[in-house]
Length: 223
Image 1 (cartoon, rainbow, N blue to C red):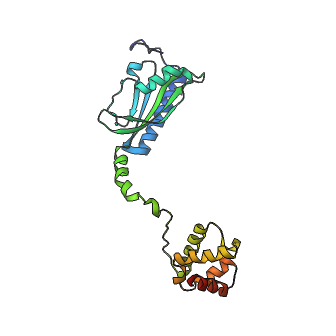
Image 2 (cartoon, rainbow, N blue to C red; image 1 turned 45 degrees about the vertical axis):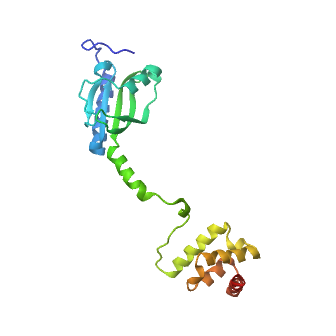
């Protein structure tokens, strides 16, 4: 798969010219959509030493006529025309920028690989931002089951407390037996449910018992 020497390249066929022209249009659209964090390079495999024939963006500092990259040429050398596209692999610039790269191989209708469409995205600022955000987004593992509800009315708070208690109990109160319902009242008490006005009515409805039964369970709990 060695490239032909510069100056003695076979001419492109009409089909190949159309493939490269379409790749150029796509490169322009993609780079302009993603902006300065994106670079798109198009390589012509007729001359691997000078394969870069079109470049949108300037992340890597390359110029037209630059050679093919080691990762791309290795994949093509090992797999030939059956080579699969390379998606989302890490790379870096000589200046130390961290990139996320993808390469799609350009093929003729007969399946022969004639070039590559390569996209690089600069992750450097995003990785720095991630490092800044990580401490802020970190949640203590002991508190991950806690979810605060900013209620508009007491009914919202009552509902949130009931849902939290049901999650803890692992069973809906309407399906509980007598002892499980008593334990559910204990869980609700620990959640602070009975400090909220009107919550007993909500509890009774969910448990499918009378409010007097709920009060009875509460009295037994206090004893």
